[in-house]
Image 1 (cartoon, one colour):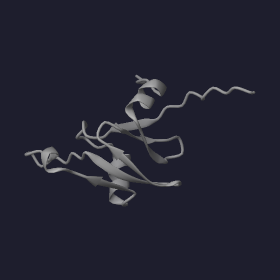
Image 2 (cartoon, rainbow, N blue to C red):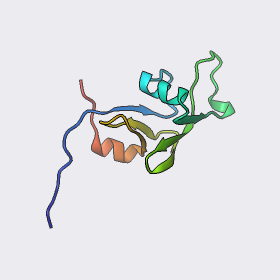
Image 3 (tube, rainbow, N blue to C red):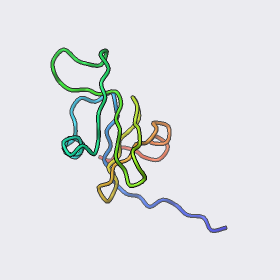
Length: 96
């Protein structure tokens, strides 16, 4: 059986529930309704800065759900998709 290695590519990602400053690409996807965010009462900050704890993401394969601690990834062709934290940490590393 032939084996393959994933090519090294640089992606952008946002961790749901921990970051308040949205990257432009995610803010634009929310504006287009490609990403629908959900906030619980407990996660609403008092300073009116939005912070969400889950999201529904429209992908080519259908709508996928990202929950708190999952990553929303912007892929090499601009596509968005969720990724569980353990998979993300095993697959990606910070680029300086």
